[in-house]
Picture 1 (tube, rainbow, N blue to C red):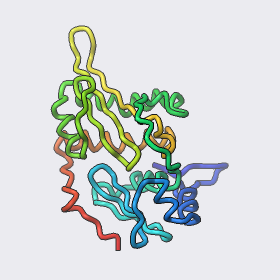
Picture 2: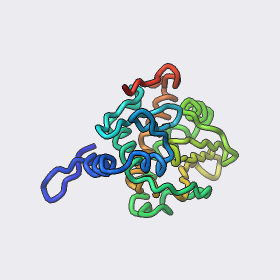
Picture 3: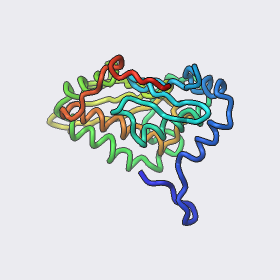
Picture 4: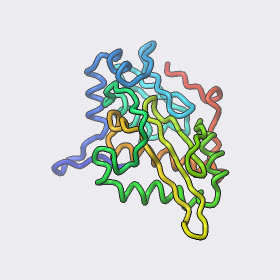
Length: 219
């Protein structure tokens, strides 16, 4: 991921969320985001693991397999943008999110279709890989899995096996409140991070550590 370019000048995507976080009361941020703030650190649950961001210096600590540029950026954005709204408890497709229609084609091609190509004939493998990330099964389609990413950003993955009339299909749904925390473009990034790990686990290229074994010392 490259830095945004504005008028010929490269803009650091961390600049805006960092300014918000540094200029805000950490207890207010924690309340809006639904995360604890203890001993100078925000503690964000992310799937089965925890991410830590200190305040005000904003150092980032995460298990090694989650210690990436994009996960760090998403964590900063989640804290900076959180609006303290409750879950709507209503699932919607990506295109129905605010500005989702603009990115819907790209989202379908780069996330949903990629997952469907890998798991259309291997729903059992998809279920096992999702469970390794802390997902829980729900009664949707031929396989429904809910993955809790950040505290108020659950994802619902629904897959259908193909048959003689229809090919396999897979869709990702969001709580209708999702854009209170990340915008549509950022949610696409989030789904890319989650889906790539689901595929890597199923392919045997990633064995995520247990949360206990990967505990991070933010100090």
